[in-house]
Image (cartoon, rainbow, N blue to C red; front, side, top):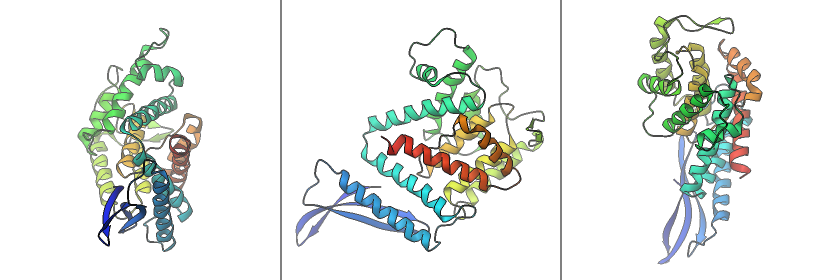
Length: 309
């Protein structure tokens, strides 16, 4: 956690901006000298500490001390730069500003994620529904309900209640499809997506259990971004529910990235063809396409919601 530390040098108090950072397998303390007191404007010190963490990350990557399996170092460096930008931006804003950031992202995320699945609402209409403001009476009630359910799901993955297990995943799906005339729980009949068979209904529970175990077991072997994206690809391949798999999968992907300190990734509707093609490649255990796709989307997300603010 980034914090100001008070130290005594020659029996006189001085302040440092410090953090304990884990890069690769090692944890290291980094710090920036502030002075005898903490000034009102601390931005320059945060910038200096941020650069130190970035330099440390570059050095560790150069020595190949960060575990990666599918992505090259330059891709991992861009991802880590995004994580560091997210971390230092979040550290300097107020709780109220952070809440606004979350809500703005939620609106954009719901608009894009639902659009990928065929929603015709525009962003302003999604925003009006989320903020419970006036909306046009002509809006299809089903799509209004989808947005209302989606914001509850977004809040759920941002709470401490969501845990990566069957119970939480089923609850997330149930919240998403409430009042939409879609069966709850795991699918009970075979489903074909893009001319491919998804997991047999009788094997869904076992395959999801294996996937969750894989995710936990790969913690020390795979880079967090690689691990989250591959989980997403494999989750979509299982296709555990009758409907809503894409939206649930993208919510879980964002929970994973947030949980590991990377913030969020926004997969945009305008890129859905590339997204679906990359997922299709991943079904053959060729994950590089989906990883590179998500890395680009992540970079765009950080630029839009962090760097440009």
